[in-house]
Length: 475
Image (cartoon, rainbow, N blue to C red; front, side):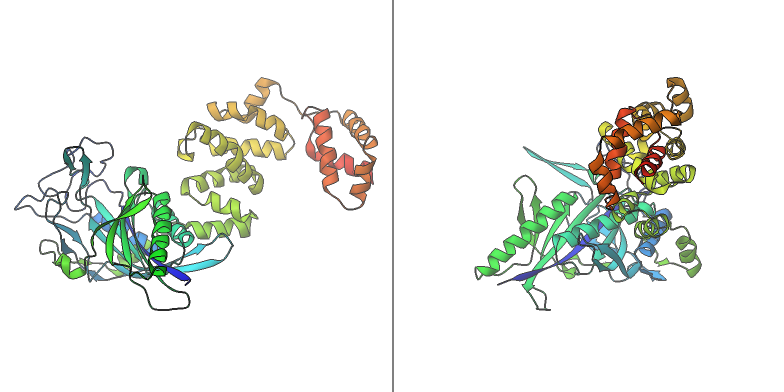
């Protein structure tokens, strides 16, 4: 029998704040010594009282708005009780029946160019548990992470393939970064996924029995766990077995899911309103003020690059991947005035040098203004593309002003028009077939001749001038 996967995702993103969710401990815990960013409140000492982090609430609202969610005027926190060594309070402070936001949606674009809307059930706020490290003779507990602020973004079960789930997760990561709510750096544990997977016969509307795989910390793990679980459930159902509703873990080394416990229901957590934290009352004015702070989001930016700047779909999406990269491109383009050429230099030449160093655009010392000047000089014919590529590594390393570097190196474009016309005439005379092809409408024949001229001049000729001379000679 042929089955269709039904997938829902719960995404936990750590909110970028100076302090934790309900206390004033430093929230910058990456690489910190274990149990050094803790206090009586986040360790659950008796008699301590939580205090809600206003910045975390505002960043949660901004993210929810960017996801198209409705912001609730009234919401509250609840205690979600369970007992585990990394949860010193014996409960997590979360939101149960009155979350801060509900009913959002985002659009993903699949590899075949089609789009699909994925509904967001809710975004709610909570605090995180600590971290357990299992060693040979026991388990170590680090409570630095306990109490750090989280957004939990819960999708509807609208995804039906690994591709859709991966694209949705990546889109969420881009959005939380764009609004400045989370760095969502999975290598630092700032973003994790729980996946819910069930199968149903193709054409059916009723959901099958689902399993939940928790705490996936990379896109690769997300994709591999989904692939494995879909395969496991398919083989089980085809063999006449039944899927058991349970919570699974992912063994990355073996590439398999591992049963951890039977699936808890809401009643098992014994939710009840958090008595020490007052409800959140969000005014219309506050929501609209935060809405104005939301920047142009990646999908809208990509569409604008295509419609207004004439960039390709691939280039537009790549530039819009991060706000830092798109900002760099726009600053460079504002200087050069040539969007396509600038995009090419950013995405090909600049990124090649950054990748070779293991750096991102945030680490780039070459200013976008200097890159824009270089592109403009190429387009104005002051230097050739070949010359620009030769000096670019030095420009990149030292953030030099292009004109000063060119003057220092004595680089000049061939300025003798008569000499250039002579070279072009010699190339044309040697290539009668290319002339015939060009007259027959084959534009690539011209490109081949331009390449020969550039070779003969060792890249010192102005390509635009070469193009014009060749066209005139071949008429």
